[in-house]
Length: 357
Image (tube, rainbow, N blue to C red; front, side, top):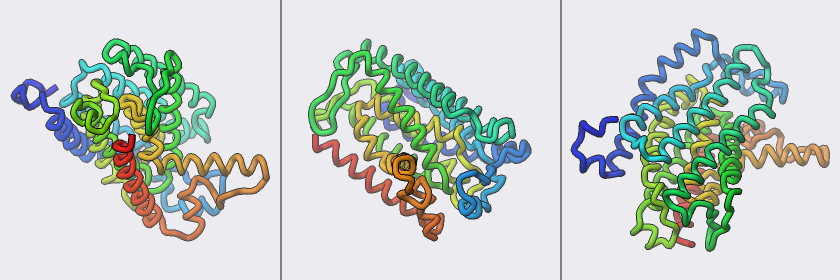
């Protein structure tokens, strides 16, 4: 860490460390990005757009054939470098967040490698991937619960209702954390289908949770807003800005036409981290609004599957929703931009909901 290179009062300020973490993570992604992209090209680790779902979709995505995938590698690296320099690893939540990103990143990378190396056309078995995600989520949930019991026992197992009150989950709390992490990581993975779509929506959601993490870590702000004070949340702000910076660095290369795709090695850990931040800040229910695009995308896929199995009919031309708009003839860049606009509106609305408790 760079703690000794600055006066003590600088690093007493969460805002200073958070700002520096964001800048360094962005620069780290910019520097590492081209190197990782070259390595992926040399290894011929590129997107295979030929799926079994639809020939028309294959045609629409043809231009993306062989585009390097597994860009999540340099996003995670950017986060870790930044957090090592400006984060406080003695702080328990910082360790848990990094553990989550690295472990889910390894699962995603293994899945990507199996798909793209030709060892398995569909990648890791869905059941195995979900089992690994759930196991990691449960381990994270137990660690967070034990830390909360020690540091903030009053909030340890509470699940706060959006507008008023809470439910005491007890030892079911780690299961809830696991469900949030698995759901969010897979929702982000489903959204990752167009240039800049998942990365942009992640960046927007992370901005919202950066503010939330900072607010709930302040006694004065929480007292004014009438929301639970979570002492452990303050350091999470630094992680959020690091994640934001690294994601923006990835978008530099993922903007249309994309030079690299995130892959499961990026979507799973970043989605999981977003879900975990929601749990740490005790704002799990706000995730439905902050990450509204991810909810809509995952929901469209689920509804499509249920509708087809129950009635034999499809609700959308194809799922998830962004591909439905592609089939309707909307340009890819326009779909992405419109989804970003909706994501911004949802994120701003979610911050307004904090005051409505």
